[in-house]
Image (cartoon, rainbow, N blue to C red):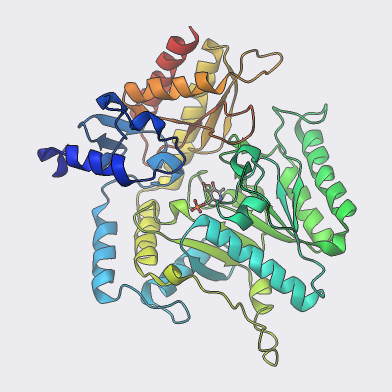
Length: 466
Ligand SMILES: Cc1ncc(COP(=O)(O)O)c(C=O)c1O
């Protein structure tokens, strides 16, 4: 590695971290002792698919920055240069005005999203989803006397960490102890065939899963339901693509009951699923809202977007006699210009390097390799996903599908880490089902990278399960 920080002793950094940083999503107790092995991990530098920690140890990152984000890989100088130049020209102005990168990125993004037309800038996936929820509520007030306010969300899906997005959260462990939640968010069943809720398969299963959504709509009253919010492929809830036939029926349902369709592309968006820019585009869906965050600028700057079609936008413009009839919302950091400047370069990299094609090719290769691993290790009950967004669900018994103890799944991740390969596992998600190994390498991944990731998993499974 060629980092500057490691030329010096960074003990002081580790101690400052231990004393003062409150890390995300982790129990701190193991770091309060004096055992140096229990130091908080600090990632110091990244290049391509690899990162180095405070001890100079190299890791192959199979999860794009831990949470499926750094899609174009580390060390992209052209993104850094574009951000630097933009910051010197103009770092910020509130989003009630326009900016050069904001306008140019919006144009570029919309060119990848036929049927969509407007980009609302925010700074996190949670916030982008909240914007869509607020728009649904405002539409309900303006057009339906406040009645069509309910937002349907799906079991196992996740839409963010704020209280409103947690109210739309289908992962009960994530939500535990944070209630009470906001009213008006209604859960519908998941569509995961491996954990079947009906004794059906394939298209028949898809149909049953959509019928189950329809039952909820009818029970709530269709005139009270404003929107349906879904992940195209459920991420943290277990990496779950919908069965064939699901999406066209979802679309039909939304049209039948005049329900706006909100697709949360925070993980899938901007290339992760391969071939198409967005997950929903594989299935011919025509959404009203598309939210996105992580891969938009691959983590080089904080940016998220709530994109709508013109039908939605028009509902906030059509009555100028009503002083409340526009979207009375602001995201302060939605006005940061670094985000769209980085996002423009990010999209150019994906285009110029053919990364959508690479994602499909490498995703197909990786799923085959994981399936070969499934033949070898009985503990892998299911392998699923799309593009470079894959999961391997671990079960104690293939027939009963009893999930492995989550500590065992975590031991596999820890062993891969010790081997220098960072993989993920569903974490504090569905009670009793934190048992799916997660893979989301950068879209630049090569066959060699994938072989290394799969081989580390193979060794770890042998070590943990025999
Ligand atoms: C599908 C999905 N939606 C929304 C979010 C929330 O995004 P953020 O953490 O940027 O608020 C996440 C985060 O993991 C996510 O996976």
